[in-house]
Image (tube, rainbow, N blue to C red):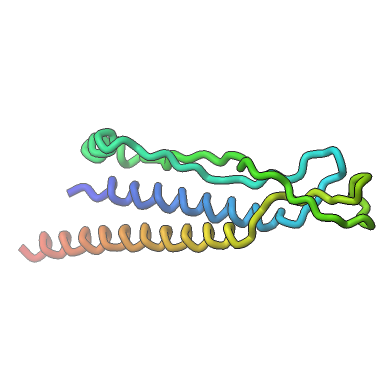
Length: 144
């Protein structure tokens, strides 16, 4: 049995979850950045994964292309309004005294980071299970 599609699927899942963690970390890093009045502030990013059709996924599993399976996702800016904070003494405040901060919610980013970490761990567990099965198959084949 060829285990390479199984490994490729787990690797694709790990790549997607790694992207989610990286984007959440980038959003958290820029949560308190400001921009001069009149200029756009940092726009939070989101990872959008594309689900494959069940028929396409089954066909992909049966073909040899699964070894080159890539995660189908894109990173796009989230449509979140900037957070306006009244800080009249801030050097980047607008004429009304408001400073524009990115609309990053730290709690949402942390939840996203934790769920991506758990999903990454699940993909590692699946890959380890496939590896164990492959090794057991070799053991069975070696003793006969």
